[in-house]
Each structure stands twice: as C-alpha cells, then as structure tokens.
Length: 238
Image (cartoon, rainbow, N blue to C red; front, side, top):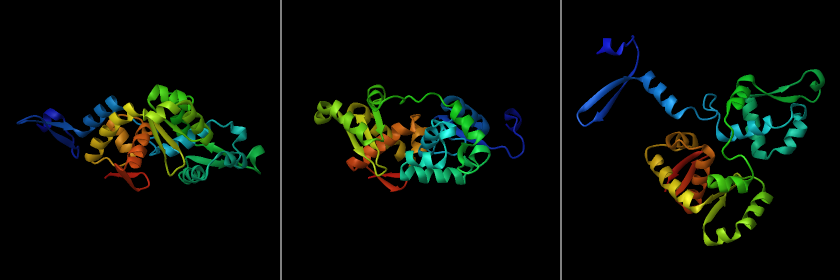
C-alpha cells in the first residue's frame, strides 16, 4: 500500500468511506490540491486577511498615492476603519513611508505582496451602486446613510410588502436583501453552522459564497433572532 501511494516518511494520508463498506486512502496533499482546484482561495486567504481588512485595503488602494497622506486618508475613514488600518500597519500590510517629498507628512504605502493580491482579484460581483448590487446579486451592503435612504425610497413598495428586508449592524452598515434570496441562503448558512463553521471565512468557504453575501445573511439572522454574535466575527445559532 505504501509503495502504491508512493508515500515518503512523515507524509499524511486521509481515510475516506466512498460507499458503504468501501474505503480509500488519499494523500493529504492530493486532497488539498483538489480542493484548491475546485474551490480556489478566498481573496486575502493567503495573507490571513478578513473581509473588513480587504475592504479597507481596496479603499486605500482606490486613493491616489499622492493623496494617501494620513491627514487626507483619516478624513475618509470611519473610526472602525481607522482601527482596521492600525491593525494592518501592525502586521506590515500597510506602511507609513517617510521619504522624499513625504518626509514630513508621510504617505500610506501598501506592501508589495498585498498589492499583488489586490491586483490579482477578479472584479467584485457587487461592484456598482447599492441599487445595482441589490438588483444583480440579491443583496447589498450600504455604508452611507444617504445611499441607504435613497435605496429605501426607491424600493419603498417592496420594503412595505416584505419583498426586500434589511437591518443595520453594529458596524453602522445597512445590510439589505431580497427576501427570496435571503430565505434560501439562511437555510444554507444554518446547515453550514451546524457542521461547525462559526465565522465568515469558514461559512464562506463551506458554501463557496462571498464573505459579503454571508455577512448580509448573518446580520439578518441576528435581527430575526436566529443567530447571535458570541464575540466579534464569531457566530452561533439560537
């Protein structure tokens, strides 16, 4: 068996039952390779970056380099985003460069490996206005109060009839979704959590669905009393 699998000393194998009474051994590295080919890596997974961090990095990357001096950037960030930025700087994903014409002010610079990660990302399915996101994806995460008000006015009839539902999270964002989309997703998320997934990254990976989509579902589940956030980013069923 060892010879057939071409195992080297110390290599790990996984043991699977492929049908009742029939089992197979597969090298762990082979399983990981197959999963990677099938599922791929979630954005930021290589660097251990979460959804909030990736969103902040995208926002920072969208600001002209010459305008990334702390004074300008801080005016564009919420208190929570400033905390995320501080964490990213502590990890070396973002640095404050002080050289040349930026010797006095400093300028935020994204590390080369994280910048390469951002450049390799596929365009976000949710790109566009909140209205476009809702129409195209079935959900939308809205950060600006004015955008949320405009969206509510646009879909006032659907909101009153319950066709569109939403809630505001503790992070001050508005999580909005079409009822027929979110109802189907709630059951999928529930089953994923029953299997042990309890954070956005795990649930997203399990369902092969984006973290923003899962975040919308979880926030609505919390609002309905179907789930609780035990601690930041860690969820449980009720």
